[in-house]
Amino acid sequence: MKKGLKTRLLLSSAPAGLTLLLSFGIMPTALAQASGEAVPVANSAPAEAPSPSKPAPGNDGANADQTPAAPTGFWDRSNLLGAMGGLRPWLGKYGVSVSLQETSEYLNNLSGGVKRGGAYDGLTQLAINADLERAVGLPGGTFNVSGLQIHGASLTQRNLLTLQSASGIEADSTTRLWELWYQQSVLAGKADLKVGQQSLDQEFMVSQYAAPFMNATFGWPVLPSVNMPAGGPAYPLSSLGVRLRARPSDAWTVLAGVFDGNPAGGDAGDPQKLNRHGTNFNLGNGALLIGEIQYAINQRSADASAPQPAALPGTYKLGFWYNTERFADQQFDNTGLSLANPASTRMPQSHRGNYSLYAVADQMVWRASADSPQSVGVFARVMGAPGDRNLVDVGVNAGMTLKAPFRGRDNDVVGLAVGYAKIGSHSRGLDSDTGALTTPGYPVRSAETIIEATYLYQVTPWWQLQADFQYAFRPAGGIPDPGNPSQRVGNEAVAGVRTNIVF
Image 1 (tube, rainbow, N blue to C red):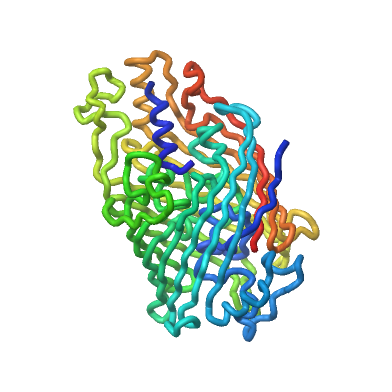
Image 2: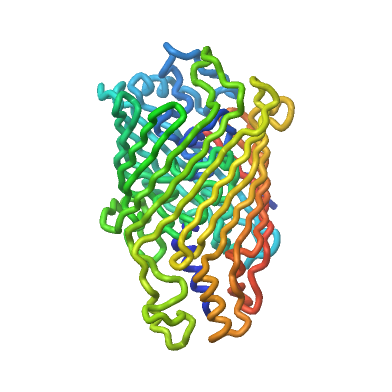
């Protein structure tokens, strides 16, 4: 369930046999900023969608003069369909890559929540990327267009009601445009400018070591997902805007962008239904300004012949976002009375603008040897926002991944992570007022905590299987059960399996 609808559902509740499906896959798993040695990830929509600045896998022959030929054997090549009868190498000569990927999963709520049982959901992604220098002779130009076909049902919306969705690919079933942009390299390659429809979860707030986890909060975090209009320009929505990326040195990267403030194009109704096919190209909903500075240490050179650092790599990021729209207070009306007061006008106070500050850290902390695939990486991501106009005022992610956990399993990943979402001060205040003024004993929400354990099994370079377990403490911070308002929604245990195939 995408963000805005989920928020309204939770706010409205505040005051008153497993089938494993064969999947077919899309886009290379690529992160906006790979720090050192990336871990393989099962493409969980936002954070793992294709990085358009890199060619898709299976672009056989596109760079044959610079690199060894890619493996062509069925079990060794990077995608299921290989060269596609020569189509991929032919397109590669003109700088064009086409990538297709299907992610399918089944999740089951074993205990707690508002309903037991399971749900299947899936995501097909298609992307076309063009190097315009090779295609039409325009140096430094890149064109990208991508689309989504979302299918299945949302376990979170139907059974869980958590703020941190159990899966990063859950969304309304539809076929939609995702991104459509042009990027131009400037300043002798030290910077590039991207213009068009963009999804911010591809570049901003990204954590490398959080990528393998299935819960949505480890991709696009819960705080912007819940607090931004329509959940912000992130999967499955995007916004028109301009992004500048500059690299003053190998260690430093600066990102800055201005985007339309509401990717749905309106506030009344489900944001995904308001922009059902991703073709609402809006520019009249305020502005979202976002910036991020990144510092990378001990990064391995792409040149295999160059000296490589012996120290362990890491990436550290600081960022902010600011939305110029107006935002409703979570506790008080326009006269200063609590919204729970029977005498309230029910018209919330209006605050100009909304903002958040955040920090992200990815650090490898152990590696068996300089040339060993076995390593341990840790991550942490912390962000805060004003508690008067936001349902969530603090969001925290932290965890660790072990790559190559067993001999001969160099690309498998084991991970353990926690996601924490603290309910904002005014939302908690409204709960207290409701208990004092209208509904004695009404529960006061506090915070939602998710713990996730996962194992990612790389069957072939183009096929991944993933087993996953999540446990949610105090779903949505401790909201009443809609079917039994006298008690809270119970803690939830969710087990699932995901399969991902890259065509």
